[in-house]
Amino acid sequence: MTDDPYVLVPRPPGVDEYVDLRRLSGLSPKTNEQAGFAVANSWAFCHVRHRETGAAVAMGRVLGDGGWYFHVADMATLPEHQGRGLGRRVLRWLLDQIDERAPADPYVTLMADAPGRPLYRSMGFVESAPHSLGMRLAPEPR
Image (tube, rainbow, N blue to C red; front, side):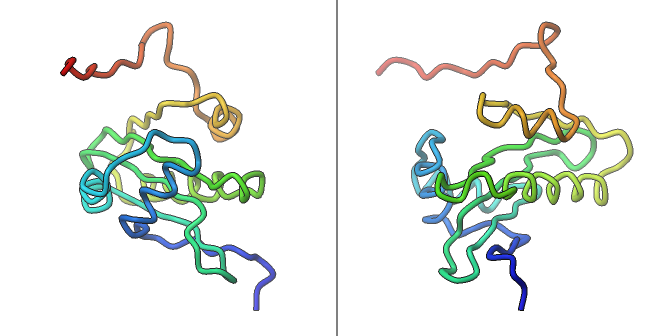
């Protein structure tokens, strides 16, 4: 038996777990309908479970076209499990998937919230601004 209390699972968590991981880790909440599409349509997805409880405690996924563009998204770790290398484990697995499955010279992006920036920098990510600026389509007023 291993002393590691966590196991990386190379597939998405369940829809309810995805919704809970996002909400409880501080990411914007999503509906089960939105989560269903995210779980079903990601290029790569993994999550981490606590061995003793079986609970999903961390996750991350990659969106992409499989050719050259890959975007890391939904990097989330429950607060009580942060600081144990789970984000690094998830991101390493996702980047390994890109290395193993994608053609040469992939373009890998992510949106880095402040708490994740030290991890992303330590794994080779650099800021794209001032040459680029992350943008999103704003919802129309109702």
